[in-house]
Amino acid sequence: MITRRNYLILAGVTLALLVPNAIIGSGKDVLWVLDDVLWFGFLLSVLLLIVMTVAILVRAATSRSRDHAGATR
Image (cartoon, rainbow, N blue to C red; front, top):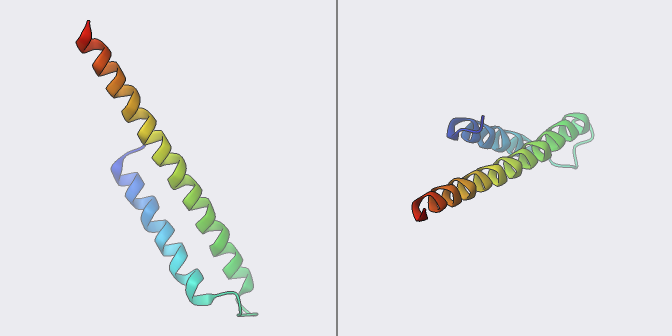
């Protein structure tokens, strides 16, 4: 279920993955594995945020169209 709480948690996780990834950077040879894991986790969380946003917009549009169709009859 997509709720505001789940959406905010995912946004927080996305930010939490971005910050250490930006701090480590790509120039550190020792932490390259951790950097890769954080980067792909960040990309996955951004993708999930996009999917959740589209789902929220579609759900809102369909509920408005149903409400509008019921009001005209």
